Image (cartoon, rainbow, N blue to C red):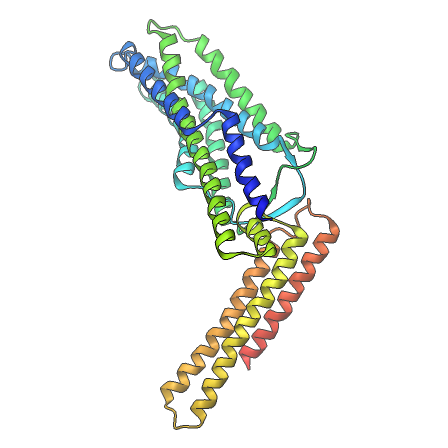
Length: 369
């Protein structure tokens, strides 16, 4: 296992070198894009013909957004998979990541609403393109926001990781709906662009809009590379701890599963039984120390305050046990009925749950007495 950690570090570094995409490359691309934006900006009559310019920027942003949804669904569903793995707290995104994702959707939506508002209240006409697109993108925004909110509330997550020749395809109803809506937005936006008659430089505005919108994606990619760099650094630190502290093979395996790659179902069940045993051993020591303290106090004239202090510590220990069992039951409940888990693994998970429930009931009975 010690050599395996070193191989993981070398493999990740090799992938990074072979891809040719580094943070420095992306920073260079970002600088070039920003430079091109500053070159195009003087050619665009924002002050003189703002609303005409907005009529070109809005469908261009919408085309980019449609492509973003198509690529997101495609890359999220075309993954090689192996065994199902349980990974704790892996769905937390950085606040800035979430902000950029929401902004990518909110920007075209805001422009579409603004254009529809202006044409209705100032020109007394209906811009059906902006109205229809605003409704569709509003739904996209709500779905994305709820998805991010749901992800934050999840305790555990079943991850499908690379390994076998099986493929998680994009033929489910949700993916198909996103594809159809995205294609509709792109097609409708292209038709809208061709239907615009204006004397402003349409091509310059179109290129400016694409470059401006791409800035957000470049920044997101930089953050993704940073996460990859953090993984390599974390593995290097783990390798250092292995060598300095002489960590055992089993502890190395648990460390990799717990912090990096997740547990196979059977390993996670075994790990939790070990965790329960270790936790109860620690609790038993606390209880034993309390009993010794109570015995010492009984041999002398103890005060009411000392008695209350002992009682409070006993209640704290009991509550600690209850909190532990309840949290573990919630972990099991969060994924044990997942349709991808095999029946025999579900039975073992339910056996683990029943064990935790019995311990929780026993602890509550002790607490009540």
